[in-house]
Length: 158
Picture 1 (spheres, rainbow, N blue to C red):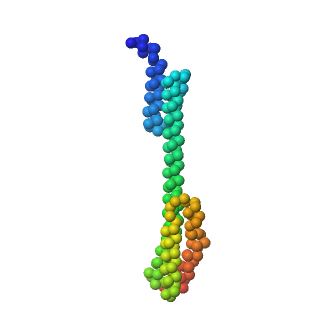
Picture 2 (cartoon, one colour):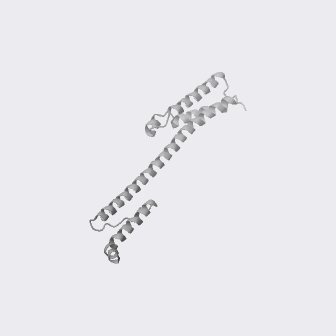
Picture 3 (cartoon, rainbow, N blue to C red):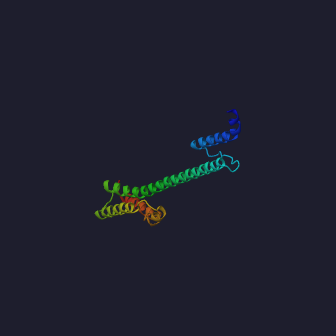
C-alpha cells in the first residue's frame, strides 16, 4: 500500500492543488492558476479549470459593467423627468395661488403643463441615446419656461 502511495504521490498532490484552486474559484478568488504539468488527463483538467476561472471572471466583470450602465441610465432618466416636472409644478403652483393673472394666462399655463406632461410620457425608457436625442426637453426650452414663470411672478401683486 505504501508503494502505491509513493508511486502516485505526485498525482495526488496535483489533484489536491486543483481542488484548492476550485475552492478559490468558488470564493471568487481568480488570481490563482493551476500550473500545467505535462500532457496527461490531469494537465488537461487543470487547463480547463483555469479556462473556467477566466471565463467566470470575465462574465462577472461584464455583469458589473452592465449593472453600472443600468444604474447610470436610471439616474439619467430620473433627471430628465424631474427637470420638466419641476416646470409643470411651477405652472400649477402659480395657478393654485392665483398668480396667473388673466384667464388667458391661466389657459396658457394649463396648456404648457399638459404639454410638458405629454412630453414626459413620450420619453419612455428604451434606447437611451436615441430616445433622449428625440426627447423635446432642451436647455433652451427649460430656460424659456422658467423665464415665463418669473415674468408672471414679477407682474403679480404680493
